[in-house]
Picture: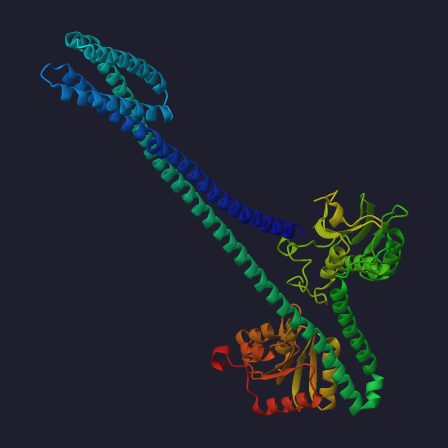
Length: 469
Length: 131
């Protein structure tokens, strides 16, 4: 039972490992997607900033500089004394349009979002533009007043300087936007590289986890296949044993009938028919055992209960002659009155009879020959133990001793290996448990526990105790 | 009539068969496991062994193996395997005997087979030759 528990624990570990691997694989895929999405959003924002802000700003500032150069040229031409009146009028008109275009381009730039530090540049550029406009207006006023010399003086002294200073601010703003574009481009490259690295790591992790999950699944499938092979082999072994154990006694019955048919007097004299009857009873017991095992999985009906102390006393009294015939002392330790188990009396008798019968049958040649039965109230359940001084259960057989069709390899005691399997099936069906452990000095302690009457089954309320050993 | 050795762990079957074969005029001896059967066969070589398969201590095939390999003279004793095991033909092939009868059997079938074996007196062959 303990080894079986270890096997179950190992299966549970494998199942959890499989679930964990699947969960981690999925988590890894989700993380890879999330990181990829985060990086893509960063790249998108950077690209949007370049195409929607930096490049349009550079574009409108470049156009503004072009207009600024045009203004400078027109003012130079106006101040040139060799131009005729017609040419001057055209230049004045062009100058007015160019100044409008410059204002439009600057407004377009101002409408775009600013990078850090850009607003200060724009403020300075606006101040320079105002200075420039004031100076141009002064030049035009002097020019229109016919004072060309004074206009040229203003132009060379102030206007050209104002134009150059505005141009310098525009260049500075273009530089700022260009450097922002460069930085954003580098950021895009960095995000793409980082995204590729993270994606590669997470994909590799996913692949490793998927491989682990596949490996675990393979192990589970292999274990399941081995279990199925064992079960099929056990079933085949069981079918063969049942066939043998029924066919063999039937052969003796057939011989008995043949002998009686040939010589009825001899048959009667030697008690041949009586022996045949006994043999048929043995076959009947075997069939009963099979039926009991088949029906042992049935759950108890509501309200059934068995009085533990009374039943144990009855079974021990009934089996004492069998024990004494085998030189064994069969004892029942005092049981606290009033303990009831949630099962029918018949089921309780079957459980305890099987364990006590086994303890007697398998006592072997031990010099100390004693079987002790005890029962304890352990809270929500009743624990019943059958302790013997026999040879004990070999470690190699502890794993499967409660499995159906299993008997000790060197067993010479009649049986088909259903007794302990029936005990476990009965206990399981009643929400209980069974097990075996080594006795303190010699032999074994087989135990079973059942929920007490009128308390929920242990499956529903959980285990609140552990057997010793 | 022949000297027959019956080896069967089912005491009733072995005793009744012995009784029936004595009734038919044969000399019979009974053993209830393979080691006891080997001991009786060594004491006096039988003409035929009627051998069960599943027995405690020494099984039927193990006893046949011992007779064939270790006991001078006993390898020539024919063997009839009688058992309720499922694949008795396969067991007989592994033992090397061509004679086997699944349980339960009609007495006439057994007597007929014993008569045939006593006429043919073919001992078990090594399994490789049999195959």
